[in-house]
Length: 121
Image (tube, rainbow, N blue to C red):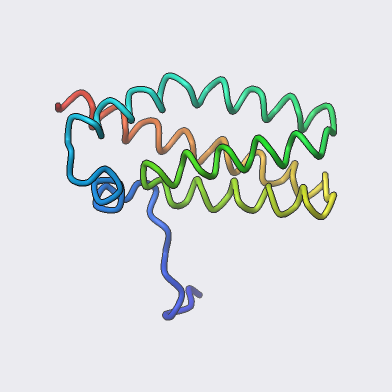
């Protein structure tokens, strides 16, 4: 059961993103388009680091992904990336592999939302 006091992370928090973008719609659209273009490569690099068991690079890549997620309000995606970063700090490759699948699933949800959003602009 969900803890009533714990906030539920949104797949995409549009309001938080717009606050970071100072309500600049054009800037937001450009950032989202760039995010959609860049993130697949970031995910591919992270997966390679995980498969190579390069914990230091896993930590660095997941930290970058977490920051990019925060910029666009991708709360749930960012939380998973943060978990991977923490697992990398702890050297827990097994936990990282579990989170790897969750990260991909959440990215797929996010990508769909962002793509639909841009089509409406």
